[in-house]
Length: 203
Image 1 (cartoon, rainbow, N blue to C red):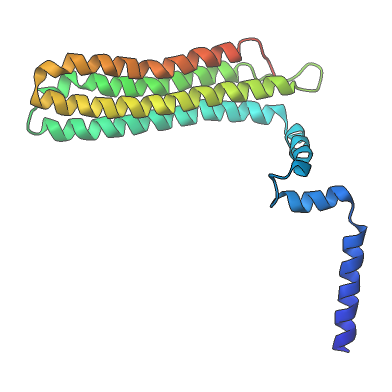
Image 2: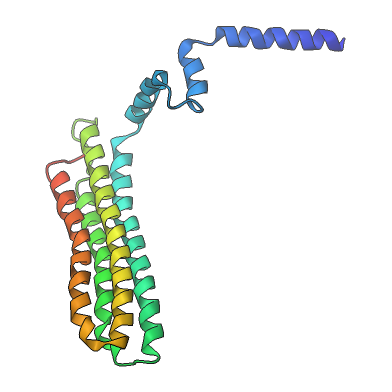
């Protein structure tokens, strides 16, 4: 009896595999063999099926979320060094707060860009949203978010070094502050490119 059950199950499995179409076979295998050229078309179709509104909303999330992450990381790095060095040298606590302001500017860039991108997400008059606009807004948000992430990290590291150097030698503050200004400009570059990328698109 058990032999018959195993034989019937084997026959059913063979029939099911034989009835699969080529597209179904690719669907089940492309999750594991995504790098195969035969799977490229499947992933292109997958991206085409995702709504442009989703890509647009994801761009807004990247713009504000990743920018705030970079800002918080920079404040954490420079703030911890500033507070620890200020215990022995209280004079550095006031003027080195400019490093925290530079790190906070990364989050402000992200908020501004997120507001600009959000204003471009409106209901389509034709009923079918533009895929190009969705991808453009996503790319603009990712550009701004990633540039502000690295900007916040660089400002945090330079600001930490500035606080520690100022504690030892006050004459080094202005020199390192110039380096910090250049580090803070990295996020502004991303904002400019993001505005250009999303300037002529409406989802």
